[in-house]
Length: 480
Ligand code: BG6
Image (cartoon, rainbow, N blue to C red; front, side, top):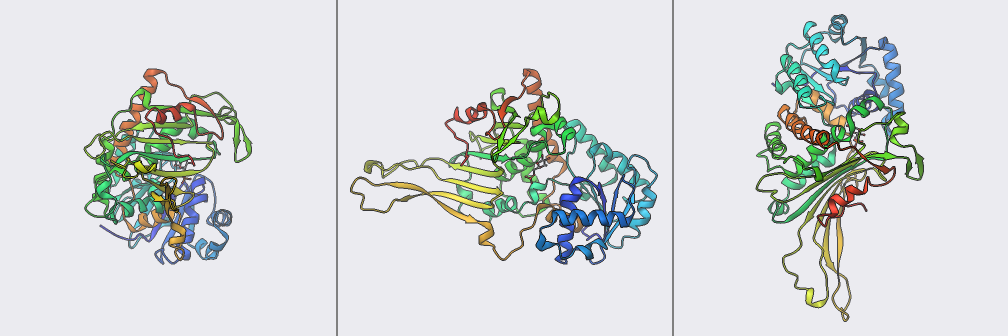
């Protein structure tokens, strides 16, 4: 049943995500009058704060994280905020929370941005306080487990209190504008679909490169590593959107049905199809940075880089590799998808000395949002020394093409969808489980073969074996 919540309950309200993303997103939505006029936001965490303290805390976070031109609505937004301290592990405190939430006339949206180890106790507390009854939906932030088994445990615990159509699993990549634009590109244009298959596409590359290192997340990251932190969720979602069949409509069931088919069609990776790395001291953007082990203060086998050659075993993608790589402390921050088309079957220009290059589609997700198609064009001239062709880009810079529109961050979109109840951009249980199954098999392979990360210098594109992984197939990573 669809409803727009008039209460939002935020667990983990003093955490890093709340400060950097959730509070700024809600404040920006409020400033644009996109929130229910009566929406009351109740924050909770273990810290012993009053509502007044929490509002001060939120003001500080908003002043730090909202761009200066979007700070106008802070005072009005703070009035929506309330706070109740709760130790999520004990049932006490949930009664106070329920009293603060009060009657929800249209509905309640709950957002759990806490350690997954607290999920079960939190759900029990919510049930105990009657906060799972009626129009209530729940949003869950990653990580949803560390493998298939633990993910099933979390999903089982949540599904005892909430049906699947009330569970909103966040993958913030799905809230990014250019990620959704991938669907528009594929399914709102006639041009691409007929050539979007193994007959015309040579391979696909998906890169999510970061310049940052461990940041302040030492314990979490060292237990997780790049495969579980980035590939299991964001990168597999990107792959699924690139590879899925056309859904019948842009609706939650239709889109997720198609994504899950792709995730289930992923072939188990062979030993020589995966490379892992861990950064050592180096320089990123001209700044000297320490190695992972130095940042961590001890030696570790956790991978900060992973490159994988994946295959989707179905008719459409037979024989088309999907090269994926992600890492920390790489030379630049870039997320992009490259669709490399095959060569033309016959060149009429060969006799005139001209060489052709295959078309390439590059979908830039961040920091630049753009779509670029490289096309062959004739170099102007009289061609007395032979005809010359050159690859030139057809470029759409999204911010220029849509200059009058507000660019929103992923959490603005996702929080509004949670409040209003649209599940299209949230991950369904069967998707998460298919993702974990594939990832678990890779981790088992590492275990069986004693694979430990190779080192790479911070500021490089990962271990040389990652370059070799693609070059063995005559493919170069798109690094320019
Ligand atoms: C998070 C990961 O899910 O995504 C982080 O836990 C990573 O390690 C982040 O830095 C990247 O998100 P974005 O939106 O900055 O690409």
